[in-house]
Each structure stands twice: as structure tokens, then as C-alpha cells.
Length: 93
Image (cartoon, rainbow, N blue to C red; front, side, top):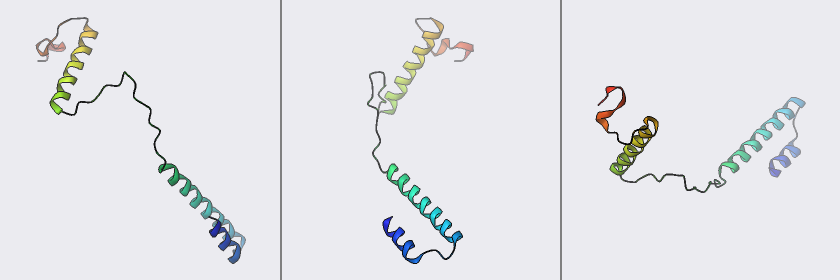
């Protein structure tokens, strides 16, 4: 950035409008460089807490865990202890 300022200082703008364009361009370049630097910073990850569920690596294990979770949610909402696909609300099987 200092090199660019030195070059502009040496060459100098030919008129006021050119000087303003140069200042705006340098401000844009500076802003872009700050944004790029921010993107290159490591993310501050929030450590997982005990309520985070682990996602199973095996697709069948994932399906089974999802089915169990859905059944648990339905039991909680309906207040029933047992429920299976044949007992689905709305007559769906």
C-alpha cells in the first residue's frame, strides 16, 4: 500500500477529478484486501456441547436413528407409549 501511495505521490494526478478517482480506487483496493485477510483467518468454532447429536457415518444407521427420533417425537406429541407405521395419524400406512 505504501508503494502505491509513493507512486501516486511521485506521478501526481493531472486534475482534481483524477485524484478523487485514484483515492476511491485505492480505498476499494484497501477494503478488498481487508476482506480477503478476514476470509483467510481461521474460523472460531464453538466447541460442541452435550446436546449435539452425532451423525452416523453409515446410511442405514442414519435411517434407523432418524426413524427412532421421528417415533419418539410422535409419542411425545400424542402421549402414546407405542406407535408403529400402521398406526400413523391420518390413516397413512
